[in-house]
Structures are given as C-alpha cells and as structure tokens.
Length: 139
Image (cartoon, rainbow, N blue to C red; front, side, top):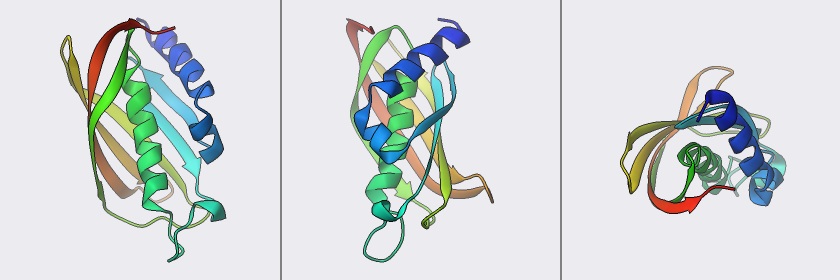
C-alpha cells in the first residue's frame, strides 16, 4: 500500500470513529505502519483536579494505535496496551500522539505511541500496544 493510499484509508477509518470525533481528534499524519493524531483538551475532559483525565490521554494514544495498526490491508484488533503517564495536561493544551510500528508478523504487531505537547515538546505519556492481525480485509 502506498503512503497516499494509507493516508486515505486512515482518514476514512477515523471518519467512522464517533468516539474520536466527540473528543475532537484529528489526523495529522499517516503512512503504512504509522499515524499521528492531535486534539485540544477542553473543560469537559478535565478530572476533579483540573487536569486532563487520564482516559482522554489514553484515548488519544489508542486512536493513533488503532489507525497505525490498520494502515495495512488486513484488519487488526488490540489485544494489549500499556501506558505510562509522564506529565499533566491542562485545559486548552493541544496534544499529539504519534504511533510507530515496531514489529509485525503474520498474526501480531507491536506499536509504540508517544504523546507530547508540541508547544514545548513536553513528553506526556508513553504507550505500547499489541494487535492481533485478522484475515479480514479492511473496507
């Protein structure tokens, strides 16, 4: 699959993701085995301490993970994910998640997703995830 085809495919997949739409997640970069997304944290996404809820940060990383792992012809489904939180995020912060394929076999693939705040290049979170590669072709 070409870089252009992968970008179009990931744009289509993200367009069908209502949860990502509700979070305001946008695709900023795509290719085979990689994806980058961003969002601006709003008041509805803050926890009781006034910081971005951990689930919001996880969801951004998970979206990049899902897109990168489905940038090939076959559908992939997450089977494991882990995140380490490194720094907090406040209302109005724009954060990005960049996913990179580390390893891919016929049945499994592993991805690294780095979440950061581009305004000052602060590392926000480190995410790793594993997918099971199905036989189902993506539509």
